[in-house]
Length: 254
View 1 (cartoon, rainbow, N blue to C red):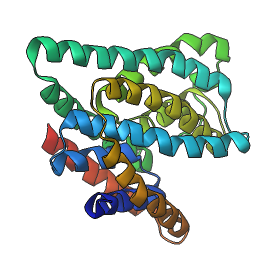
View 2 (cartoon, rainbow, N blue to C red):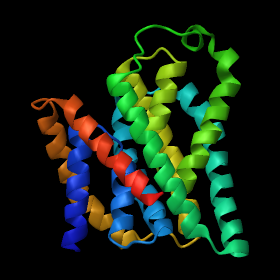
View 3 (cartoon, rainbow, N blue to C red):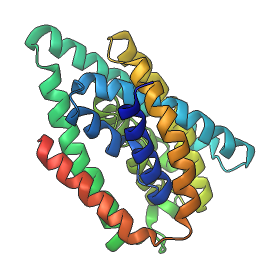
């Protein structure tokens, strides 16, 4: 067991459990900082996330807090989006040998976007008032759901970031759902997406399995500890701090 990697997993898991902020936006840049190639950091994070989402998704399935129709339509767009992203990465690497540069720049941009989205939800945009999309019948927003899935799936396949935070924002904006259903639907869909994207990256040799398991050794108790403390500490200031760290990380990578 690699103690340093397990400690990183512990810290990331603790912050995720404490604040609810997505793990990929925290973990992937940390892996890059400690010298892991960006392609391996992204692929390993996707594999790691598929395991964590499996347990979370199973729990929400048991609680009946999953909107399966929405999961199916998001996945109908996001999985092809991830396939296209990984295919283009492979193509660009063959012809231009610049996969690392593309992924690092894209990762930085997406970290800035995710941080801005988190801060906007904390201090700006409110979702209590229904908009026209939320009141629209599902059949009329079927294709926009698939299109958003494709766009965000492409981003996740490229950077590993956004499978939770960006899709959650899309769900809140498009559908009138209970908070528990937003979380459950988001996690189950993310499981399918990151599993496929992780498998594609594994096929390119971008997954370090030992690194992933060492991260899991630390992150599982970290998430449990952070979740236990989350009700006892104010979450809004902590989320703002974590979002600011993600923002600065993204700017540095760009």
